[in-house]
Image 1 (cartoon, rainbow, N blue to C red):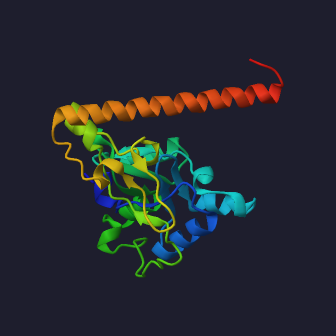
Image 2: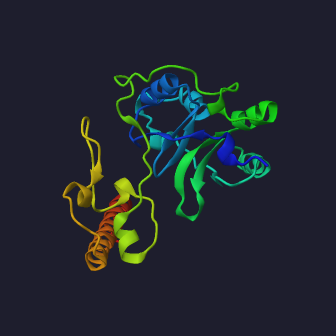
Image 3: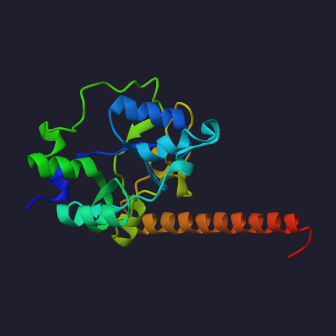
Length: 232
């Protein structure tokens, strides 16, 4: 029995949440793909991209276009995959590794049709597989192949796997036009193999995130009050 893993496209092409519609379009064209994953927001398919062309293209970003992506485990059957895509009215699903939820690839309705017609995966050269070509890095400079990462602090301190929250983590350093974002702990070369140190840093991270969330909530409350013109 074929599984999702045997017919999916391996690897995930991603873009930053603030990527423009033009960047997404260039990425899809350069890589000959129909979807781009936006970490923390979902997935943008060619359908969302086409719909965006009817609006204010210059102001739209990947985060605004992304829709939640159905999730499939790599061991799911093709029948299960078809049902999930149908129920979610979706054309693409993110394939993950069991309970760790580590992203492994993307499955599309075309992959399912390809498997039905030829019984093999796109990587084996069947119809609908990746076309030969080279991504133009000058045109897609803010797009990269996702390297699945787990939070080392969580793993060492609690023995649990957690996908790196990237920009949502208080210890994440945002990137810029040239330098990619990165984990502050990794950049500084902190040895977190000691559970007590990992636990301390994890607690610090969570406290910073709670404080940030509280500050954002208070600012939203103040803005709400200003709009009403009264104290609430």
